Structure formats: structure tokens, C-alpha cells
Image (tube, rainbow, N blue to C red; front, side, top):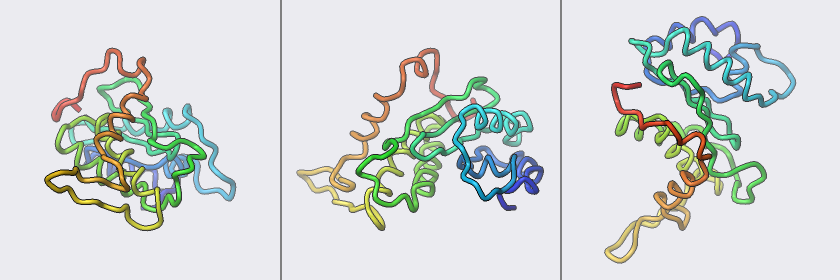
Length: 190
């Protein structure tokens, strides 16, 4: 199945079999509008509308799944049937960040960290934040990030920084409004 409007119905049908779908915003746009020669314009309203269509069609065997739309430097959007409003979470690096050298692998890094965190905690918001941190390490250089292994005196570092410190920094950037009234999702509550 390609990300094209011809495959939209097949994608919707496949969503009933998985707990999470995570297209990027360009793939999502192409599923609803087809491929075009011009660049895809970023639109939160369009992304939310298209994500709602997937949620309404049913994600997961019991329709308790979640859609996570990866939007590069715009961050990620999370939506499920249980959460009626989309939640936008920041990317670690914003537009024009000098630290971004090569975006190759950012989506794969995001999804790998997301999958592990989601499996461990069942919380898509936390999983997105961890995915954003993983992606930040992937894009700071060409090739894989540099790992400095821990010793009895030092902690493990990636590209010279500690991942948990980066995660806390990212959490601090989440607008208060998105934190108020939101509880942590647990496995089984998706």
C-alpha cells in the first residue's frame, strides 16, 4: 500500500489490526489528496481532520488505538477515540535549528523510541516525547549518533548529552494548557 488516495481504504482497513498508526503529515496528506508535484502545505486543521477520519474508522481491534502524526520540526500530534481533542507535542529542534545536520533517519528513530516507550508505559504522549528526543540525536550529524558508554564515574551520553536531561527539557516546553486536565494513559486505557 502506497501513501496515495488510491490506498486510503486499504489503510483504513489495516488500522483495525494495529494499536498505533503513525504517518508523517505528508503521507497523511497524500492519503487523502493524492500525490502532487507541489509541496504539501503544513496545516494543523487538515492534519487534525484527517487524523479524526482514521480514529472514526477505528484503530485497533477494539477501536482503542491511537494515531500519531509526525510533523518534523512542527512536532507530533496524538489523537484517539478516548482523547477527543488532538494533542500537539513539540519537536526537540524547531525550524532552522543550527544543530540539525541531516534529517535522514529521524522518523525511524522517532518510531523506534516511540514503540519501546509505548510498550513500557502505554502512554502515547510520553512515547512521543521520547521519540522526539531519539530523533534529535539522529539528526545532529551524518550517520548514527556518537555514544559515550557509561563508567563508574560517568553516565552514558549521546552526542555529548544525557537523554533524560534532554527529555526533561522537552517536557518543560509543553504548554501548560495541554498538561492541565490530562492524565497519563496506561496500557489498556488507550
